[in-house]
Length: 561
Image 1 (cartoon, rainbow, N blue to C red):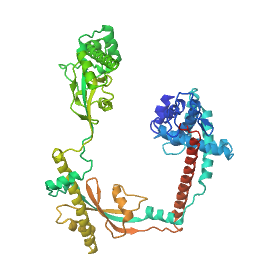
Image 2 (tube, rainbow, N blue to C red; image 1 turned 90 degrees about the horizontal axis):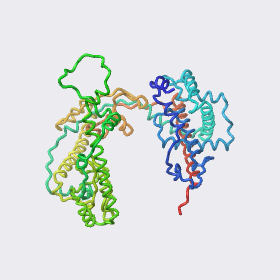
Image 3 (tube, helix red, strand yellow; image 1 turned 120 degrees about the vertical axis):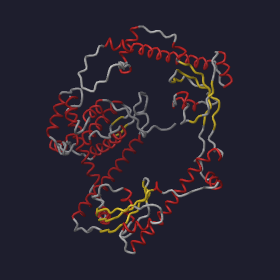
């Protein structure tokens, strides 16, 4: 079956069917924020009843999530269906089916199920329409997989989905919509715009900015925590180097060969440097495993010894850590005395921040995190593996967040001040250019000529571009979204404020703006009203169902003691 899936669905749905089976056959392991305790093995947990399911029972969890996962994969495909979305869908589906039972919605008929199948994304062809061949092949493959999903499961879940959709339709109703909403939507979507754009390159804007010490000091003082130095920790460490154990490592030929067989990709056969590289395609002769192993045996033996030496270093560190704990040494001085009695020397690291792990340990964030867990109540860490062996950390002090002296960060403050001032001046320049653009356009200049005149004397160039007439319903290709964002504030003849997008300053000129027919005579009016009404109805229904789910979960929510 997997072979058929790979061949048939790779061009349409990739691994939909595989995900479908995984989502249904394998029990979902999930955590519900509103329902603590679900998924735990503790059978003493209180019952959590939810629309006929007991969420404290693994079997009920599997049925709830399994049916929802099957339904979602059939209806929507497998794309983007993470555990959280499946869980939310499962809860809402259970609530809707509960209403279906209360309202005595009858079971789905075979004709309704057949009609439902034809709407499923799972069985859509390349054109998006129902593909009978895909559906039949799917059924045939179900029969060859007796341990997985069967046709009865599909029929049962689809039947429930039909009933759920009837409830959704009743909850949504006709949907309420005002005529003004329809008109606003038509005007937004179908207004025809004829615009021109002008862009100025921010990277080319390089005004001379020479701040004084007084200006920099004021900027520094008003920066809040921008230049604060984050907390830093000072620790010492005892290192257990794997190299100290390497000489004592012995391995047998059988162990070396077993290590090679378990990690063949780590030991590729060396290339003979004397052999010229061929540029022609040749048939590679069968490899000789024994010869391949013999060619890399020294490297394999060394790697195995190093791996065992590292394990020995970690064990030695763990033994010392345990002895240190049993000694009840709880202060830095007591820990130092204990280590000295074991003839173990310590080294102290320079202070480091949580996001700046010490380079001595390969920049390990795990070791940095462990260092920040230490304090005066927990002076020594457990044994921590490193690329070269293992270490035990000893806490010395934690330096709190503090503001540095100005001199220590002057260069950074200066660079930030210059960039901040540069952007402020660019914005001011944008206001000036807009004013000049409006004046030249009012005087009768074409937009490109107005842009050229407005840029004169600035040392910059305004690149003007005309955009063919368009509507938001049929947006032109290649138009920046920041351009479209200015339109709702523009009337015919106006120029937008400068919008900074990426490294460009952008102006939009509304050369023409033609509103569409927003009366009921427009064929789009009825269609738009239908779409808005449907959306409003679905939104109301969804809010009602979500409230049902929340209230049902609260009924069995464990009470705080």
